[in-house]
Image (cartoon, rainbow, N blue to C red):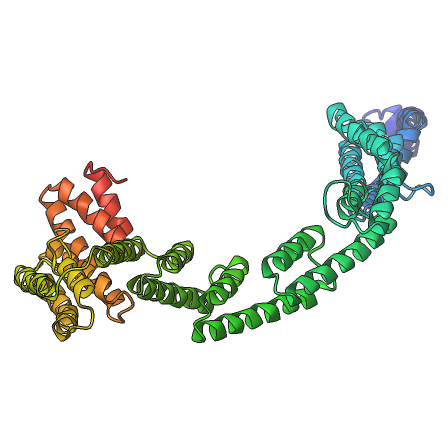
Length: 521
């Protein structure tokens, strides 16, 4: 029996209808989802719109102002470096930095730039004050105050400016006084003379043209006076005028010519001194060499000429004393001392003068017989021999060979025996010196040297002998100081100072002696 087929559902019977239903539901779901998305999209768009409305100005400022600020800062820095601190057209450093602060009030670079501008304005005001531009100084100071520089610094400049303005009120009176002094020929003889007054004006106003011109004219006249003094041989006066002129204006156009005129006058005076020395015009030679040394104290030619003049004066004084011309001899001795004759030379000359006076007194005694004179002469000659053998050339006083010789010369100056004794004593004194120096008997060598100097004050070998003896004293003194003999070392210093005060080794030895506790006068 055939079974009836199972019953189909309504949907199964209509598959197309099911498909339609399914598709319709999908579209409905899609539409519903789409409406939700659009609602959120519209909400987001509205929020973005509101946000843009709220922040549109800050964003615009950021996009548009930042490059402008950087440019303004750069322009301000450039203007500051070029010294354009402020400008009416806004291109100055101050205006540029202020423009930056107007755009961004919190920009630190702009505030720092304004501070630097203020400091530069204050420094500029100082420079203008120094240059004498008082109005410019006031303007720069006002700018510095506007930019709030430290008040104490600004006040200090303001006080100086005020003082300069007060002083400037008397500039005209000073100029008038200076011109009057110049017209009267009072160039540099006190504070009320022309050059000091012009200098006062220039101290207050360095660029004051009338004062500069007045000083120029006054210096020209002053230098003309210096050249005239040089021509007349007044070297010290001319040099003093030149020195004074250099103090007023070291760059004056006539200074080189004036200095050259002085140099020529110095050379001419040196030649005059040398000619006078050759002619034995010793006073004129001394004046010439001293005049040169008053201008150039280290001129070697003048120093050498002065020393030669001293030696010539000593020799002439000795000769005049031997001729009993004591007044002239004393004048020569005084002049030699004034020219710097050594103490040793002066001492020897004084002894020679004293002996000459004693000899004259002996001659002025009542006349004696020829027999008595001969007997006394023989006694003096024997005394010379005994003193020679004992090495008593110059001491003890009254019993030395030289004293006996002078007495013999007073008794019979033309006697051949007396002349022979005198001729014998000079080489004997030199030999005595050399012998004692070789044996390091420095005191005995010194006595022989004194005799040598007394017999021949201008002998060529004396300077070398004094030098050798001074070195030997120093060597022995150094050795004795090393053994602790401070007293002998001090005595050695005294001897070296007397013999050769400029000995190169002396200062170091004196320091050693001081460190050892020695006393040096």
